[in-house]
Amino acid sequence: MTRSPDNGPVDGRAEEVPPGDVHPDDLSHDEAHEDLHRHEDLHHDEDHPEDEDWFADGDGTLADDVIATGVHPDDVVDEDERPRRKRKHRSPAVRWGAILLALVIVLGGGFFGARALGDLVPSFDFGSGAPEDYEGEGSGEVEIEIPGGAGGGEIGQVLYDAGVVASPEAFSNVAAADPRATAIQPGSYTMAKEMSASAALERLLDSESRNVARVTLREGLWTSEVFALLAEGTGNEVADYEAVDPESLDLPDAADGELEGFLAPDTYSFAPDDTPEEQLRQMVALGNQRYQELGVPEDELRETLTIASIIEGEAANPDDFAKVSRVIQNRLDEGEGLRMDSTIHFIHQERGRVGTTDEQRKVESPYNTYLHEGLPPGPINNPGAAAIEAAMNPADGDWMYFVTINPDTGETVFTETLEEHEEQAEIFQQWCEENPDRC
Image (cartoon, rainbow, N blue to C red):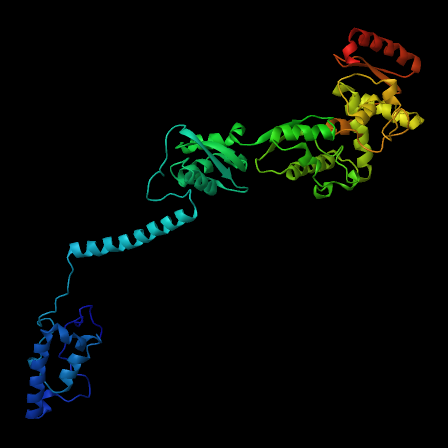
């Protein structure tokens, strides 16, 4: 029989005798008496919730069993008349309390999960509001060291440990919101104490805040001059650079173990702990990068740099680089000596005077282009990118000579014949007479 949710019969009928069963009147008195008492026990048990397992199956077999055992239907209490068991109803306060408890558990788990995420990702902030931060530019000075490859979280921790910012998260949040933060360079910086995170970021992006030695090496310097400038800019000794083994610098094969010509001109920023070897290695590395960018064939690198170095030594104006390159190429093609004063200056390692003397030009050296035809055995200085490009791409022209008629302005005249050249050389000699201390 189908039962309602409270285990009572849907139609309330319990007196129907199943076919084939014995009618209650046919039962003996003892059996009826015994079953009557059992029926009374049934009424008694209904008042005791602890015995509710009797109805746990919910299929109505109990009422059927009573009828089947011979109890008269009149003695059976109708289901509708039987006192119904009352459902236990929780008060609204209890129900809402349970709901709130569940919410606390769920939200609490999310909170602690977010806090755990915040520990892994410093820029993630949950539940604590904005991270602690100072205001303003701060005061005093403190040196910090930003390691290579450090991200916003690691930099924030370095700043926090040094007392620069109030919390690592304050800086990492600011850095994450500013694309410029990716330009922060590793190295030593001078910062202020108790700076705002945004002020700290601006300071790190300011190249003047880096504790570095800046050395500008112009194009066309001899290696001896490079060493002197490096020593002056970094506090090292010239001997420290001279003692560096060229084999440790990753020089290209074309260098043949020599530095001249392979130290790329540029402005360098060296960290306080950079050794002379590391500084020179940076310069060689930049040169190697430039050769690739300019497309210099590896098997022509030494010759190209040699021509470029002569261009640097001879041309006063970069606009004349390609023309000087053409004169060099034309002379090489014609088998004439180059007769370049820059090669004589290199031999003597002397600057300050324009031109050369007869005595200087007589010095025996493979670099003396007055005595030896063709190119010198290697570069005579450290050329820049423009001169290297000019060496590979000389201008079109039949010039065989050139002379700088006014060293003050760099005015240079290119000529095809010796006669034309000698005319221009007289103009230069007149300038020398007017400037005897320069010639």
